[in-house]
Length: 435
Ligand SMILES: O=C(O)C1=C[C@@H](OP(=O)(O)O)[C@@H](O)[C@H](O)C1
Ligand SMILES: C=C(OP(=O)(O)O)C(=O)O
Image 1 (cartoon, rainbow, N blue to C red):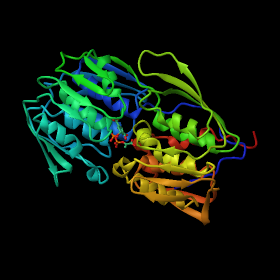
Image 2 (image 1 turned 120 degrees about the vertical axis):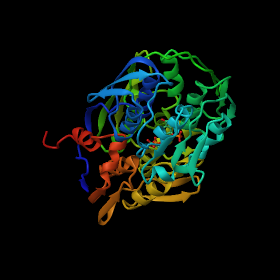
Image 3 (image 1 turned 30 degrees about the horizontal axis):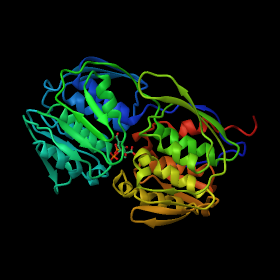
């Protein structure tokens, strides 16, 4: 349990560099492991989720070493993994689970996989349905959940698959099987989801075609180890963007954030709410980067619909907090995917923010946030809970910056799933009133 503190009246100030991108760090380890030779990954995210991806490949015999911000993977190729002696632990990580169900769907031995309580409630048929059409074989608990077995298999065949949900994890699982399959594999997306898998496959020397939501891969010749520079994670930066906007008198810069257009929905949505966000672009060979400048500002309520969700899917909790401070209502619809994340994020956002006086109506596919509520611990004190969900934990920490009364947070350990050191980094930009 930790005591949370209100920001000083002088606001939040200074520069902050958030850790490396989680989605890209997972993928860099995966591509590094199946490539030939060494992959060096800089600004690597050393978080609980990514450690589970590392753990899986170590169990498969891949040599991986790391320091604070760099990882080195000595690739083995797809056909030389060792049979692990134990079940593979995916921890809390949906990305590890779903991508690896595709990547490891053509191994000569069974792979037992399991995860924590939250991950064991998250749906997997969305990946096993298309992968089974490709002739991969799985056994799921209750035909949907972990623990599961990725069964031994020596054939994969390409398919054409129209995505029923916008999900980069499903798309990536199919593409990672597609690069080992006979024939062509095509994924058709209605709405664009994050394209880090496609970009990284190209960087590792692979061939992929992607145009207007139609993405095609074939069996690849041996990929080659690379030097990967991971951008700072926009999903982590989002907590600082909203903290800077809603905490009076703030003025902060968030350094070298990844602004891939399939991920920058949080910036677009905050701009629609009236935020003036300065993006100083930095030239880079890989993913696009920018320093982002934020000042405290008044915001207006907006309407967020299904088409807005994929590029901001993990940022909806912190956007909901921003909406509690906006003038007017913010209506979020088409966001049913939030119900199958680490928690039901529609329910947990509402349960936590209402403890601080927010006025939010629950809808099956979203919420209506009635803005303009000064946040305060009801009856003077509030016990917030991360519910084991890193993004709910971090939303609570940011909410406490503007909340009156005594606020404490339980389940703070969850934040290390994507951002170890988040509370310490928030403390760094709290300018002391005596300065
Ligand atoms: O591919 C990825 O790295 C991710 C995709 C998204 O999940 P879905 O594919 O389920 O939308 C996102 O919520 C998750 O945090 C990371
Ligand atoms: C949903 C998330 O991750 P994952 O699906 O990898 O557990 C997230 O990071 O918010």
